[in-house]
Image (cartoon, rainbow, N blue to C red; front, top):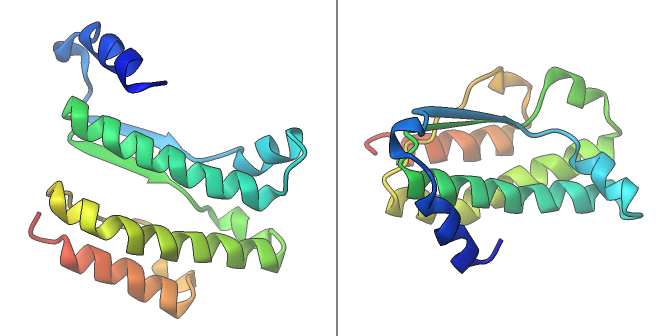
Length: 135
């Protein structure tokens, strides 16, 4: 959706109907990629853009809490190279988005069992949580 169309759509939104909390289950990116004859990683990487758009729109609309369900216990059963790629995507996304998180006064929280994550992924997540703690 281009910016003009987005602004026109935003004008149609009744601000009283905007929820305080939106939760998104990030599912189907790999299947979508396969459907268009791309590698699963292409879908996961494209999913990062969806996160960015969701975050931007949430900020714009004043949604107080955005929860992204990004990785489940079942995801550990995927091929090791796919899990590693997902962890790499997460690391890169946190690194890239932390300035935006700070600039927009967003507080990053992480839920779930962090002990299962690779140490560098867990450390990067916790660093983001710490740096945004006062937001």
